[in-house]
Length: 391
Ligand code: NDP
Image: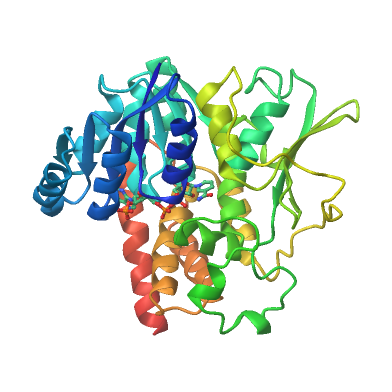
């Protein structure tokens, strides 16, 4: 029986994970559930899944969570704060951690799980983008394993022998990351000047949280995934290519030197990747409908439009720059996306903010987590200043 901590249980990935877990009560148990401020949703999930521990990140809401759980007759421990989430990720109540907090807020708990040797099911791509070498070192020291949940990386993991081998020795030539293209595929810059947050969050194929939905619309999501693939699979930047594929059925591909190209296909539903990662190396059902290729629309592929969707080009630039440039990129993007979602920044200016901050803060070597935290804060301060000047 796997004991699973779901960090970010009230989110889109959290909900899909709990759906798969509930289908296999003989194999999986949700032992720890966490949320940020959505205390009502967390209490409801606790009533349904009966974890041993519920944690609300905002300490001001701990008493309310306890009150709601008591009223619903749910008997589980209650805690609050980010330190409690990191402690639970490393603690004895779980052997598996689903890292599904959004943004840099997920870094400490991802690191804690890695250090403690847990099986880390990584959805929180921001942690590996920010701190790739530190997270991989923590995994090595902890002796646990990382199974990627991001559908593209999960697909590549499935197409590689042994999951994450030395690419050069395995005869891999290229990793081809597919991208849906988001809701604005095919639009010109002029057509993007006044798009709204709701339009940006209306993804044609995937149902996701608002931050990753905006990242998908700008293609920053694909940029973060390029950086994620670089770290997860030790792939040089020249060996990673992005291919726009609007049907979102081919989740990514691996090209070998003999010309073979292996792909993983499936309906666009995160429960497939989650079921794979939860049960690996076995397979369990996920509840996802079978893929009907004969009835499916034709599969289309095209190169990304880097001139319109500049965030993807900026992510490649940050990866080439190396050091902590990806962490700077990520922090600036988080601030810019928050401003866009709040109606305080035009869609096209997200890339401008990220570019300004990358220029202002040239890359430094990644030394340790404290220094990285300082650089993350410096990038956020710089991004907020750029925002103020732009308004
Ligand atoms: P959601 O916005 O739907 O959910 C985010 C979760 O994190 C919620 O449980 C939220 O709690 C919690 N949370 C938010 N901020 C904090 C914080 N500061 N401290 C602690 N907890 C916090 O996001 P998604 O599920 O869409 O995405 C989660 C992660 O998975 C992201 O990194 C995303 O890039 C990645 N991912 C998502 C995919 C998807 O299909 N959705 C696909 C691949 C990767 P609350 O509800 O209380 O706010």
